[in-house]
Length: 406
Image: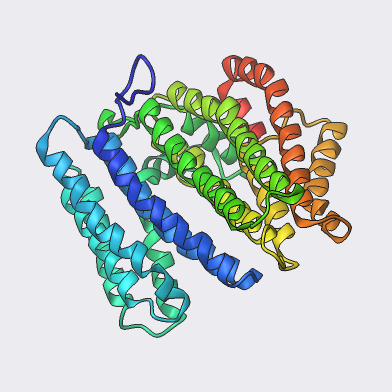
């Protein structure tokens, strides 16, 4: 059965079933980019992905804290959530057409289920009920203001679900010690590593790490599906066919290595050291994983477009910008050192990653995918080299490691 480690809550079968809904939702977001490969559509897709992401976060964190897969009521709660989430996935393409009402009502329904499922966690239940009302109200508000309401609803969810205690602690520190920005920043980092005063607010680090790891697998699966579909669409098994197939699969494997060989383990250890501090969980997972998760969708769309007969000029940029965001979110080129040559090296690596797209002017699209895959392999090697040093620094001073890596 699914398990994460020798301690902590296990990811249940019903949660895995719930995640299947988001396989389809992620595919819809990637398809929207492929259908109209312009940067404005990418920004719109990011907004839609963010709404779906925070919906998934709600179920993942609420079940992490209060769920018990052995209880029938908790299983029914997760299964009930699949219905509005699936409807939201089917309605997502209507948002791009300027008809967001169905999507908003589905998100409202998902939050009503969350409000009921919160049970004794009254603050969480009231917060999600408030979000549901906001999404319903947005149906009657003209565009683009309805999207502003969506943003407010999602922002306040992070506050009541994961951030409340950190604000209280930092506020007390400022009142007692003064309002120094630098000292307040240090106090905020230290507050993240203090176990929550209320044990019921603690986040199970092993369970959350696996839930997010499984979601990253879903996103990597979208890239694998894209590569496979592109290979099937090619009538001849020529050189371009094999370059597309092998390059895309190596790219997916290297992206997997980057996350699971280092970032996943380090994030789990940080959260475990903090005693399941919810503010740290927000920084590492809920907020910290949003951009690298979307970056995988962008890379998948870019690879799919690059393997078309006549790829658009934006396709290689989607790949390299996606890789840059992913590398940044997983801290591939971060050794933790603040010396000038380390900073220059990181900036040079970031610039090189973005500008790989310029090679598309002189090489064929399948070759561009191979180049992106080779560069990602380099990133995987760098991660492996830095991993032992990062673990050592993490054991010596978790707060300093988090502050330097952020």
